[in-house]
Length: 234
Image (cartoon, rainbow, N blue to C red):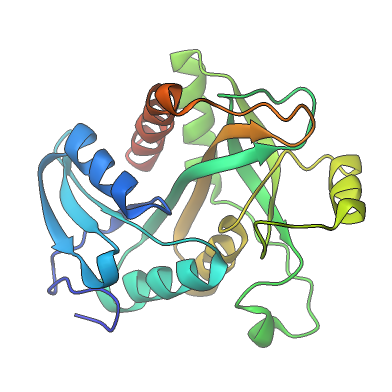
């Protein structure tokens, strides 16, 4: 048991899926895991552990933004022995060829700052995904016929960002989408020597201003979860 996670020792699996929304964590547990049970509800940040095709899996909400994500990821790694963390979430597309409902499998993540900035100090560290997870996720998407793009994400500190000039440069440099957690995930994975991957579903588009209707999100997010699970146990 830690400050933010109430699970007992052994109640969290070595493989953890991490959506930001705790209710999405419950949805994943109910729809994809067998014998899933609640192992954490501290501060309403729900966590569950069950099995998928005989493999133990946990799913733990992380909250919004890198500071919140960092708390849960650190405790999962250091106190519960998590060895594979996969972020599953949503993102805003930043390139014309990336469409609503597409997946982005993040090879690398850029950021202005992360909670790890005080450790890295002047170093512009380049956090990247685990290759085994990345390649397995790409293969799983191809088998399923799911449109998936592999490339860079931008992890933002702010949801209501008014830096139009920064957005223009990110687009110019080929960044596929924006979200709020993946950069810190990849930095923590590098620091602790674990596997990490971020797979996100495009729910809105910064250029076309399209947005995925809530009634259609479940099917698109289902594909993301299935690909994450297949990649974890490839």
